[in-house]
Image (cartoon, rainbow over the protein chains, first blue to last red):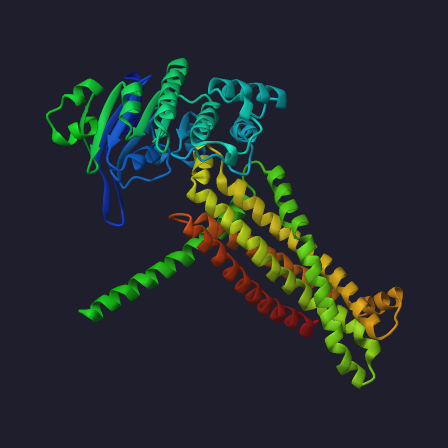
Length: 256
Length: 264
């Protein structure tokens, strides 16, 4: 078992698959959510996961950071199997993964500055207050919200919250980004801005990403590859153009 | 068919209850593991002490004053009947220090602080803020639960001392409604009847009250599932469970104190 794991780990690193999911199964109260998902994400690649509501897209990415424990199957991130890691090692892996939640999940008792400072202060104890402040301002400039530094999350619009959430996630310089419906609940113009920002950040920092979305404009803008999730399984994958011309009615329904 | 269904429902109910009890025990036990692990969050602890302690001062103060006042006014006629009115300060101070101060403070805090913690953590849970902390590799239990539980454990005995002091003052005001007694005389008579062996059990049980209120509030909030309506339910059940816990701890504390006094 130990040798097998080492071989898999070595293989993953050589192929530069930052994420490798094998035969992932997950059920909640006899309700099957994931039914044998296999997925690989290469370094620098943007993978969009498309599927209807309740298809298990969010559960899939939560398995990658250990928020949800799979019933069966293996999840490798940076060549390490997530379910076998102890809490300390899991946290070391988590630092290199950014997760943007559907509603940004900003800490509502903290200002924007404190939201960004919170992870920075915890993981970079050698940085002085001034150094941290510079990094925070730089991240806020990157998402175009430097002026909101002293605002509370309740004073921000949906789009602004998403941008701040993105800045907070990127502040730890992750190698992998997981986006859980980054454009849901936003108007078309703001959705486009967020999609463009995701792409810009990915290019700038050479980040690998998994983007969970229903928004086809977001998928078109950001995807290097799209995978389609149906009834807990990946039923198709390819580029936006390839899937757009698919003969499958279910797949086509997303592009109409 | 109906009997089978009923049996199945009963089994599910029992399973749910046992799982819930086990889960709450593990949740509380985790506190003792996490409190000594890693770096302590001093800033959050002090912030919680401020929120729990300082912000409760007006409410606790008013309650303490009224309790001292009412206790004195209601006890006075009975003592006066036996011509033992001079014992009133001692009786009021004894009642306040041993029982009324700790229990009333704990009940007010169970309502005020228990519900606040339950609602705060519950809303953090449903809006994925706790998950956000977890995926940022920050231990949310250590940051949110340990600090709050320690703050309630530390601040409730402090608030009990404050309630007792204000209660004494309420008693002094009540005494002066019917008779004329100097501030110094009242306090000398009151404190003469308070012994070290009364203060230690009272403060010790206050520590347990504080721990119970903190851990129950955190548990109810931390285990919220579903939408925003479950946040309200969590806050409500935190108050009910914490208030009940206060009475149970008080009952156990009385038995233990009684045992020590018998053998002492």
